[in-house]
Length: 255
Image (cartoon, rainbow, N blue to C red; front, side, top):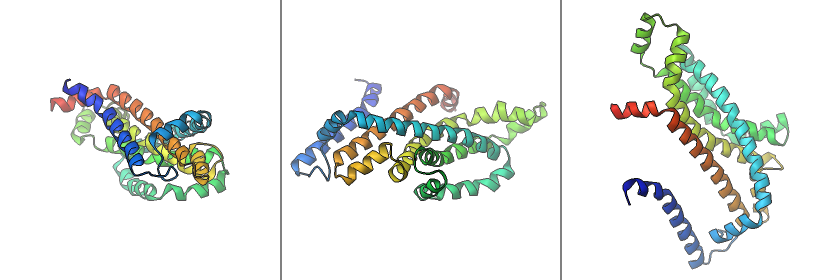
């Protein structure tokens, strides 16, 4: 078995080992199910409660993707505005950092007052959670373009728009795609937080109701499904990043 095959197998081996230790620990120490259910029991619940889990998980996925789409659009727009101007960068960057420091769970009650209980607060919470890394990474990618490169292109007759679309944005693509992987996982966190507080549907609501009935196996089943959706989306953006920024990887290898 070569090194490449070992690296590909390592994530699966680690997961299998962790599940085996979890199962063995619960059996050896006779851990009650309402405290920490065995993985085998969680699998049983995933099968027996497949329909309600899928129903709530699909709603969470939709609200998460809607919030994530909003964060991509507004994050790129604000990131371009902030990163293309040094003055705007210095003025808005502290505001972005301060906004990101506010716990989003504290904003959910405000969103409920404004929009009522339902999917809209979940979409907006997902947006607020995932907006910051996209805006900051795009702004950073634009702000870190070498000044010498801008000077040379200006001498050659390039306009500011040409510098933005032909140099700045392509050079910021590695930052952008890297931020997507972080943002999509944060979007799931935002959706579940909002659903657990201010919704009647979604995986967050399902887990809260299950916890109130001491159905901890169902809670863990919801956590696993949420984690699986996050992993799939993360992997999708990782593949997209690999195919879209190969030129940056090659450039790093050459250097």
